[in-house]
Structures are given as C-alpha cells and as structure tokens.
Image (tube, helix red, strand yellow):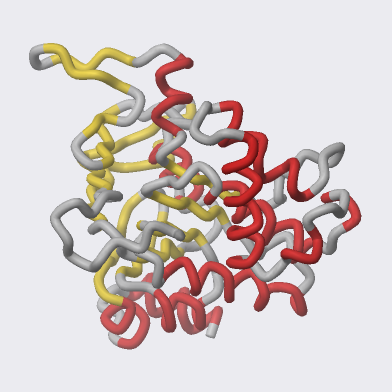
Length: 264
C-alpha cells in the first residue's frame, strides 16, 4: 500500500539533491553553503544544537523557506523554480502547492483540523487535490489508520486524542497524498516522554516502506537504529555527515563529539 518500491529499482523516486544552498535572515546566515545528496528510499537524520539551521533546511526542501543561493531538486525537478535556459524563475504559489504534494511534512505540533474527525482529516487532501474519489480516499484512510495503529479512532474528533495519537494521525494525513519524500521536524519534541515511542515506531515502519525520509530529531537511539545517513549541523553548516555508524560511533569533529556526549 505504501508503494514500497523495491530497493534500487529503476522507477524509484524520492531522490533529493541539495546544491550550495544558503539562506540569510537579515545578516544572520541560517544556512551556509549546504550540499547533500539523499538517495531514494533512504532515511536521513539531521542532528545539531538549537539554532543550527536544521528546521530551516527542512523547510527549504519543500520551499516553505526560499533559499538565497543554490537550489534543491527532487527527482531532477527544481523545487520552487522552473528552469528556462540557464535561469531559474520562481514558480507561482499555486504551482508550488502542486509540487508540495510530493513532499509530506510533519511538524512538531500535529496541525490537525480540530473540527474534523480523524477520518475526515485523512480524506480531505486527496479529495481536494483530485487524486482520489471519496470512496477511494476513505478506503485508503483505513489502510493508513492500520499503518499507524489507530483504525479504532476513525470517528473520533482529533482534539480528543492524546498527543501521540494526534501525531500518528498527522503522519497518516501526510502519507495520504502518497508523497515521494517525507519530512519530519522534531516530530516527538512536543510529546510527553511516554508517548514518544509510539510515534517513533510508526516512523520506523515507514523507514522500511521505500519512501525517502528526512528527520530532524534529538532521538539518538532512533538515529542509530533507523538512519542510513546522519548529518550533523552547527551554525548553518554541515560539520559532519556519513553513515549512522560513522557519525554516531566514530565522530571525527570535536563539535559532534561534544554534542553526542551531552545527549547520550
């Protein structure tokens, strides 16, 4: 159901290419010449202290944040821009929204529609984007509820759910548009500690589904268990990147070692 691509098949989608991306807020350089290649179906965890640019980078991937230099492509398409000759032109908001269908985004604070039931939250976008008929959208919603383990909550009001349940529904809602890429911005940071595990378990399940995941988190155990790549950022720069074993078990950079000694 979650279009689990065979690893390495030719039609695999979700390749993210970030090239020389910089972003300024006033004089402050929030992102400083970031380049990253993320393979289709890979799981990347971005670590770093507060203010290191992790969330800004994530927001740039689906053009919630415009970049000042460089560019980002998903499967060869520029995000937020179209190319004409050797120039990039910013797309109109409507075209950007259409692009964003390919990129699911899960925020810290759930962002569900409180006046809708769980099921209504899950069918709203696919119907609005004319991807599915109402009947097909409902069928898919139940499949997604099974993925996140909440089929029994279909008719509940989202505001009556626990934080962990709301976040799991938010993940299901992002998946309802069948994105090629899923972005998670500290998806457990607003949760009570005892609810963190249930959300991470859902993300672990997705990690095996073939969708490309990029997760900003402080959960080192999760990074160790699930990440293919770990990227460590400080002051808008990538200080270190590699496999989770390389970065977490054999960090080269003193800032990485210092950070890990604090959180472990």
